[in-house]
Length: 242
Image (cartoon, rainbow, N blue to C red; front, side):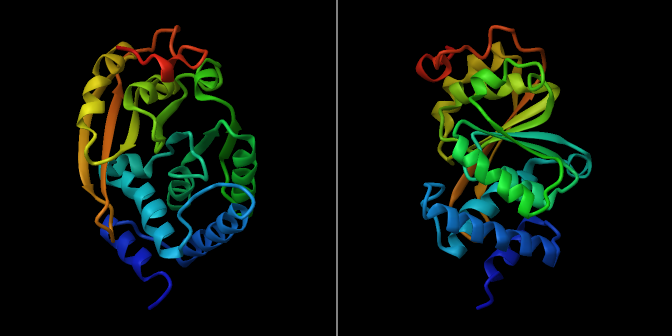
């Protein structure tokens, strides 16, 4: 079996055209991920096919909810709590015309991401070390992005408070959630409204080449976020907006 058989099939399922250069970028990314993972905990998923499906194809499922105009435009995107670079780096590889900011609270992970961006020649990729609750209060990041994405496991109410303040009015926040996320989405309803957002879509599907369920929740930013959000001192996590 060809190394990339499942990856190619999954990209075809997503309707994503690709080049051999993009596949080579993914190969190099994988090699860096595995090498660094020996000395730093980046991912528990290390088999190549598993990384292809559970990290790359899952990350790229964002295309299922984007318009053709959005795909073609010069989006400014921020990935909050990016970890080892998911979903931000796969998205950057397949949408090189987007400007992408990768945010993470762990400096060692950010340094890894900087090396990846440099090695793969990912222009207009910014790697930022810091907590979203602090960065979202800074003028250079607050309400600056067309799209914010996050695969973080944080509950939706908390994640919304960290992410929506980064999005400009008219932009969107997309949360990658488990298929059965109805309860946590419901409990985040008031938080979304208070932060100036509105859920405009909630789509559940199966990640290509797998039986893994995934829900993408799209929150449209309808109004400016009150300056008191996000709250500091870990409050978004410890005491979510009710």
